[in-house]
Image 1 (cartoon, rainbow, N blue to C red):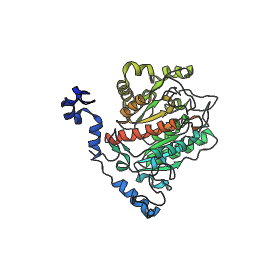
Image 2 (cartoon, one colour; image 1 turned 135 degrees about the vertical axis):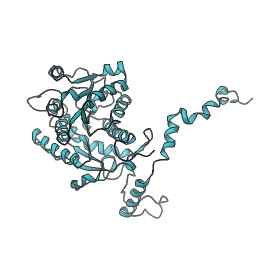
Image 3 (cartoon, rainbow, N blue to C red; image 1 turned 120 degrees about the horizontal axis):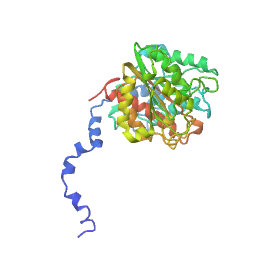
Length: 384
C-alpha cells in the first residue's frame, strides 16, 4: 500500500459534495455569474490607452499595454482619481454621469487630531489597488456605471464660508441628477452636504449615520465643528430628527450634551451592544424602517471611526469597540441595497494611518455602497 492510499478515504468516496458544489458554494455561484457581465467598457479603456498613450515597445508581447499609462494598469502608475475614474474638468457636464466623486479636503472643524484634509488624496491613491469588479457582489462598476471624479471642493480657512462652498458643490452635482459621493474631510461637512440634498428633494430626507460618536451638539468650542452636524442638519424642515438613525454609538467619547439632545429630539440611537444582541441584519432593518418612514430619500454618512480603532488607526477620535470590518460592511451592504441619494465617507486622517489601512477601508465602503445599489437595480445597469 502506498503512503497516501489510506488518506482521506471518507472524502474520496463521497460523491454528493462534488455533484452539489455549484449550489452549496457561493464562490462557485459567483464565478458563474461573472460570465454574464460584459467587458465593453474595459475594451474601450484599452483602446483609448493605446490611442492616446501610444502602442507599447516592439518587445512587449501583450499588445494591450501602451507606452504611456492611460488606463488602470499598473496600480503604482497613473494620476490618481478615485477608483481610476475619469477626471471631469468641466463640472457643467456632471449630469452626463451616474456618479460623481468629490473630495472635501477640510479639517477646520476638527477638535483634536487634524489631518483629514488629506483624506481625499489618500483614498484616491489607495483606490488604485482596486479593480472595478467585485467577485462577491458579481458587479463590475465600470460596466454598470458612468462615473467621474470632479476633483476637490475649494475650501478655505473659515468654517462657515467653507460650508457655503460645500453646499454649492453638492447642490450642483445632485441637481443635475448625479449621485454625489463625498470624500472627507472631517464630519462637520455632514451639515452642508445634507442641506444641499434636502434643498433639492421634494419630500423628507432620512439619515443613516454610522459613528462611535453622536455628533449632536449645537456647538463645540463656540463653533459648528465635526461634533455638531446632525444638530443642525435635523433643523432643516424636510430632514426631521425622527428620521435620523445613528448606528455604532458607544465608548467614552460621547458628550452628555449630545445625549440630552437624543431625548430632546427623539432620534434613534443604536449602540454596538444592540448590534451584538440583535445581530447586524435586524439592526439594519430597524435603521431602514426609521430612516425611510415617510421619506423620499435617505442619505448615508459613514464616519470611519465607526469601525474598531484597531482597524482604523488613521482617524481623529479613535475609539475601541466599534464595528469589525466584516460586520460594518455587512450593515452597509444591507442599507445601501434600498438605495441612497448620496453619501459621505469622513474622518480618514492619513498622518495617523498605518500602511493606508484606514484609507483602504474607506475606499471599500464606498465601492460596496455603489455595488449594492447596482446589484439591486437602484443605480446604473444590472447584468443578470
